[in-house]
Amino acid sequence: MAIKCALAVLLLTNQAWAWNAAGHRIASAVAYDLLTDKARKRVDSLLAAHPDYAAWSRDAPADPRPRARAVFLAASVWPDEIRSDKRFYDDTRENAHPTPLLTGFPSMARHVNWHYIDVPVPVDGAPAQPPAHDNALVELRRILKEIKNQNEKIGAYDLPWLIHLEEDVHQPLHCVSRFVQSQPKGDAGGNNVYVTPGRNLHALWDSAAGTDSTDALVSRVAAEISAEFIEQNGRHSRVSKDPRKWVSEGFQLAIHDVYTFGLDTGLRDHPIALTERYQSDVHRIARTRVALAGFRLAAVLNDTFK
Image (cartoon, rainbow, N blue to C red; front, side):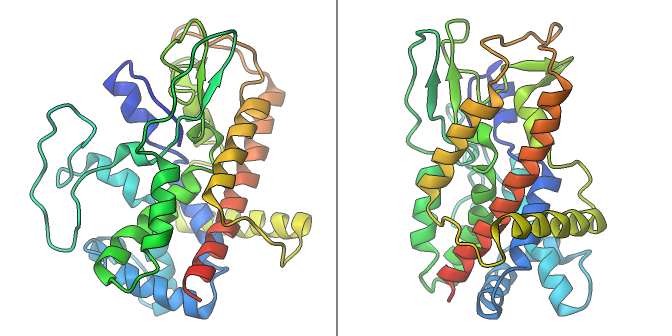
């Protein structure tokens, strides 16, 4: 996920979403199907210890393996879902009032600023601002160290965040904030750039992997993009397990593949007219990024719980 500024709170709120639910579920399906038996057993155990396991498993299949897979996919979306959950509070608001700490949770904060890192992209001589200290890279590195310990409570809380944030930073606009003279506070990861009537650039990329999050479609697309990835990279290709590389890669993609329409930012009622070629490229890149997120997530979990 990517960056901020707000038509103030509104855009800040929108910013925290990376891939939509379909994108997260597809990447997670790719990852889960690549887990080793040992890693899968540990992942299943941690998610079963999460306070929201009952909600995640409510409509899951009865058979243990499909049930555990369904829970993994549900957990991948949880960090976005708590943004509208009244049990949790927005810790980024001035004078935020914490909600009561519930059993099993080490924190009731929504942590909306964990979903992105504002690596600045200054253009046309505009001054830039550095990323805030609380960001996706900081949290991913912390969680990767922390989750290796044997504390079930912390591990159960950390795992959905690890799944989600790893997938978030594979959406290029969660790794940058573009600064131009007309937007001196940054473009909020494309949230302040309008590309169709009423729709911004960030939302376009968020939904590029698809909008249907049903189990059947998620499994079909996951199988398709996994096959495409293997065809292009080999079945046993090595993938990076370094969050810094993931963010750097997203940053470069944003520069070279996202902001290809120039310095225009568009307006809500006068958006940028994107070419069919651009929109086709968005879909193609999104499929590749979601697949890569799945393969890298599996590699991280297999290595962490080997």
